[in-house]
Image (cartoon, rainbow, N blue to C red; front, side):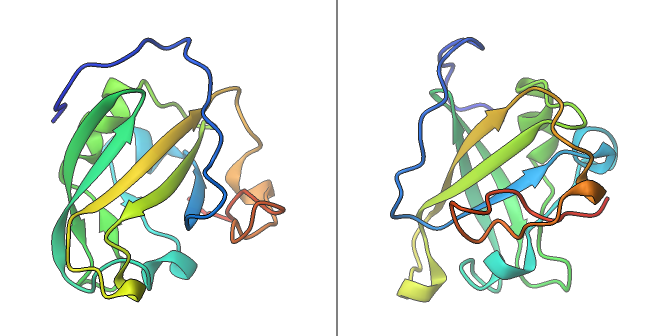
Length: 146
């Protein structure tokens, strides 16, 4: 569900803040078509609540509210993720960087979980070809198997 309309597709990519936690995912079929499911990488799960909660994704001046399932074995964004993927015309091979703006569970955050998202176009390498972990700016892409 889009909360507000924002800027156009040709906006520049905003650099990461450099001091907030983030994870990266290269889009595969399950992200951009049915079942429209985004599994949160294991290394980042400890930053999010261990319960079902609402998450706000912000991208290019617009916002989407979706459901995060933190209480299941496969912690994921499901309900609402399809709207985000469709509205942003995500395709297999696109990369997304998710930066945690608020709600970090490691800081005792009980408040709203907000993630700023950058969409990187250009048909990045197939996910199974990536070897880095996405835990630092030096190794930004996740080894994400579809």
